[in-house]
Length: 212
Image (tube, rainbow, N blue to C red; front, side, top):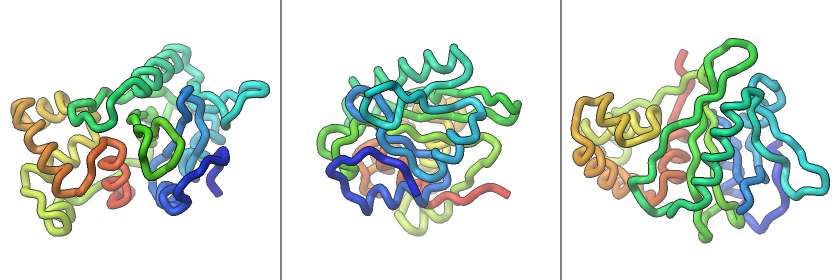
């Protein structure tokens, strides 16, 4: 089962996170990890580049650290920046933090999102999505079109946004302008019924399958 510190939370929302193929961590307001879904636990227990550092007498499960000092510094800075973000600002897609693995397998890719004071997970402040580069996921754009009414262009942006992490990267990958990407993001959020990056990522990961 997933591990978490006891907060007043919506257990149904946490159960949904346990079913996602990617690792998911929730942090408290200090940036300490307080929840890890099953996928995240497996990654952390493997000790292949990422782990939790438990501090004596400290609340929470521990601080997320990498075996690589440069990556650990990037993680600390990303968490700190995320905790100071407005979770309802649509242009706040930041670059992923890539964490090298000791085994030499494809790096982990971490995305960070602020949750805000009123979120479906309770008293958590930020959410971290961990993608295992060795187990690529796939989202069918046609499913987004049929289930949510996205246009072909919007579906492409949605998939690219999950894989790239930032609107600027999506614009470069798709060969379109940043303004066009931002316009598509607003429509995507509206059609998917989400208002934060965290909810967008959670919804898309729920539709994902592992690429064979």
